[in-house]
Amino acid sequence: MARLTFAPRRIGALFLVSSTLGAILSLIVTGQLRMGDAGEPAWAMLSTTHGLMMMAFTLMPALCGGLGLWRLPAQVGADQSAFPRMALASWAMHALSLALAAGAMLAGSATAGLLALALAGLSSLLIAINTITTFLTHRRDMPLPRVPVFAWSLAMTSALVLLAVPTIAAAALLLAVRPPVPVEDLRQTVAALAHPLVFVLILPSFGIITDIVERFARRPLAAKPVLLSAMGVLAGLGVTLWMQDLYHPTSGAGDDAFFGAAATAILLPSLVILGAWAVTLAQGVRQVGSPLVWALAFMALTLGAGALTAGQDGVARFHYAAGVGAVFAAFAGFYLWLPQMTARRVPEGWAILHAVLMFVGANLSFLAPIFGWAGAVEVAGAALSFGSFAGFLAVTLWSLRFGAITPAPWEAEALPDGVRV
Image (cartoon, rainbow, N blue to C red; front, top):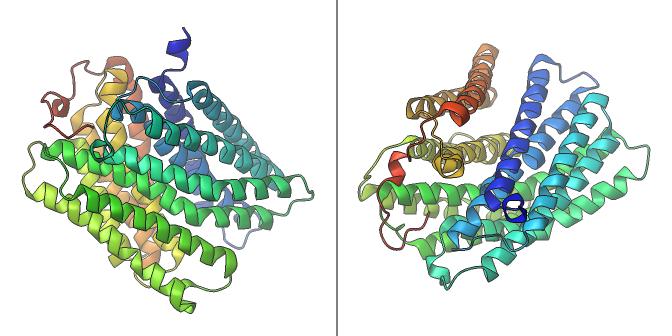
């Protein structure tokens, strides 16, 4: 019974369920933001709550806790994570923090929001400790060069979490126990967390997309050591730019030559990663499936983040690159691994339609304010995104009960030696 209770797939599934609840709450807040007025007193609280829900309660637990805790042991050849009880405790803390965040949203309480953020930070720390320990100690005679990129990305992400999150979680807790707590304290704390979380979200996204590229190309990734090095450089540059936020909060990166160069240098490792994917896929795609469609949409968004948001503020880049990109990577991983997790399949036609609707809706919604398009375009994009997410929930629930029990078509053929996804 204990083995079943602490099985990675069960804990990963719990994280995915609670993350979905976080996404629903975030969408509710987003709807309120779009119907509200930036001049209203409640606008600042709603805006902060939206960012908190998406980052700390939806994307990070879904990528690192849900897909990460479930897939990491299998990818390194282990039956269990290093600390299974710690994994369950991390989910319990996430669920409690989500309940606190929902209460903060209903009551408009900055104190409850800070407590929720501190508890979510503690949950992410436990996930990071479990991930790094599993990565280092539970590989069954698997040399590091053969470890899948997704496992590497989780280890790098965990290192960033251990570096950045304790400071933010401690600050949130100290502010929460010092009433009264103004909304501005919560907003500044969330803003301080946002910069390192850009890279906490994007690194496992790169790992998921790499696994999909290898699986559908049916060959090992081209220049895997170069891609891993680029991811490491990207993580290091992310920490550098976080220092800019901490020590020069009133200036942009371009106001300082060093930080300006670091901000520009981020484009180089991103292009290297995209190049490795392109070279691998250019050698031939053996299959086409919904995970590959989601992966290609992610690549388009990554390119668009650099090309279409050039000269825009950091909020626009964050939403378009890290925010929307991480959402697409999470869906790509979900559709890729759901048959292994549940022995059920979501209909391929719907999964592809979902990707198309979400891609069109996200671009209309987030590019409209950047290029000054009519407000109706932004509203239409948001409605399309919300509708596709509602359809995703309905189809997924139907599939878990009535979906085909046959393996997914991309799992039918054995992968070549050296590819483990």
